[in-house]
Amino acid sequence: MTRSQTASTELGAESTVGAQRRSVAVLALATVLGGLGVGASLSAGALLIADVTGNPALSGFGSTMNAVGAAAAGIPLARLAARKGRRIALASGNLLAVGGAVLVIVAALVEAPVLLFAGLAVLGVAAAVQLQARFAATDLATPTRRARDLSLVVWSITVGAVIGPNLIGPGEALGSVLGLHALSGIFVFTIVAQLCAGLVVWFGLRPDPLLEARRIAARRAPSSFSAPQAGAVSGSASASPGFRRSSQFLAVALVALGHAVMVGIMAMTPLHLTHHGGSIELVGITISIHIAGMYALSPLAGIAAGRFGAIPVVIAGFVVLGASALGTALGGASVPVVQTSLVLLGLGWCMVTVAGAALVTALTPEADRPARQGQADTTMNAAGALFGAASGVLFAAGGFPVLSTVAGALVIVGIAVSVRLGAIARR
Figure: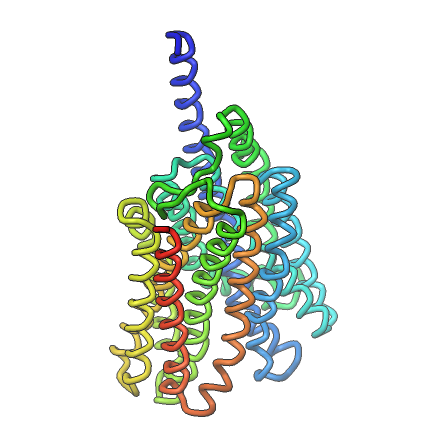
């Protein structure tokens, strides 16, 4: 290689590093803004359903419809990203979420439950955008920094998750001023937040990380194209397509299993606490520290995955989820045990989700990544919705002990799949 070629390569590498830093910063900011809307709407959705329908028993459908919408949007957003790039896909998702918030406001005005459920489902696209954003952070990342950069975007969800629920009061005041249903006022904040997030992505995500990654890959020698390794798994680009696909589907299954365990136990925690005399304030505190466990330490999970490999971190995450299930099964009326278990539940979910998402990316050739990432998001949300719905039946059958036992069985499956995937990677 000549001196001029070497200089050109170094300049290109520096340019890529700079583009990646900008992409992560833009994605994190957009996720913070979008998260404000998501956190606010999830908090008010259940209350609004109970008020519009007159049936508090239906209030749980708010989170269910949100999960359904997120699951339905995962693959279409990924396909749009594959054709047009991350910028157009993410901004389009933000715009759809704005439409969902408008539907919710209109439904509350005319007291139309069906329209309200539809609006909450469309608003679920905002959650799908957050999931897609974490994958966008990996497009230009080096393999050893992939999990870390992904985790930084996941961490930025913390801001919206913490601040969002506190906007209910101001939202009610705004709704009254605008002549809206008081509980729908908070969705005005959601509209503004999603619009701002979309604008940040549209104007800030340049160059588009996915399209830029493809241009870089096109300049490489064919032999260096998308070898899945470096901090995630050991492997070879020469493996057969069937071999690679099976490992990708196993990685997707790991993320789905971890998410299902988290959603199932979390969904029944409020009922468990109130059945043992806990107050609404206690429920709020418990869920808040659980959310902190989910997101606050995500950069550490990303750093660990980059240093020790994704599969060991995923296995460790399932072990933490198992400890959480054991705590909820045996905790009974002990608030400290239940709260500790919920913190562990969030931490285990974080480890599995961050390392698992990095694993899906590392195992998938660059050309196929958007599609596989979309499948991972859809599968993850669908698994959460299914086990979340089943958790009510299991809880009714035997409380937390029965629910936690089934969750523990899913944890064992997750560890077995992780070990299997590790064996495949070593081969």
